[in-house]
Image (tube, rainbow, N blue to C red; front, side, top):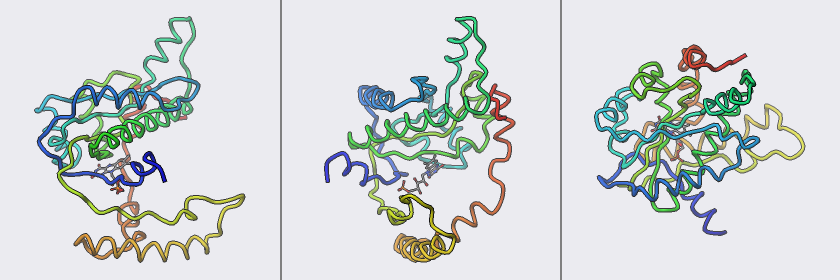
Length: 243
Ligand SMILES: Cc1cc2nc3c(=O)[nH]c(=O)nc-3n(C[C@H](O)[C@H](O)[C@H](O)COP(=O)(O)O)c2cc1C
């Protein structure tokens, strides 16, 4: 339809990178594009910590559950919600920074939009990316490794580099599963649309040489047990209020 939409629609996560750097000017350009994203009341409650030290990157491979591309990618960033500056700004005017859950949610929204704009910029420059939620596997140790200040909340990692693979597109649900007009579908309608997507997803996995599983099966294997139950205690230890 147009070149921006082409870039967006050609996205696929890259998990194998060439041993080539991401040019510093491209990193700055991508961050600038990230900063251009909308931000709630201009709070800009985000930052990206680029990790260049190979020893730290090797440790992050372990801490993210053994994902080798965390070290192989030309660049790796820890994407953080960052309310530290806001606290400093408030206190400099004699106010307290006291935002409770809303402040944390604003930071998560802002940081995610910042990161996704960076991603689109990188992809438009020909790089491949992979987000790394595994960064949250063991946040207290990541915290110590990266010396995260209070008020800064690491959310996910981001690998960027020159792709060394061309994965097939992972199919998404129909547009009608994401766009509702005026009212929400019934559970039965949702169930019917899931049946169709389950078949598409199974075919995709089989074509990739993976075990035949429907999307519903993959989700229930993943979500049938608590995930990262210690997140609240870590984030509150860094100053977040989640109430
Ligand atoms: C916040 C976030 C965290 C993710 N964490 C990981 C991760 O730790 N490891 C990984 O290999 N992929 C990770 N992914 C990539 C997703 O698995 C991938 O986007 C999804 O399966 C869709 O595939 P696609 O990006 O190729 O279209 C993450 C994606 C997001 C948005």
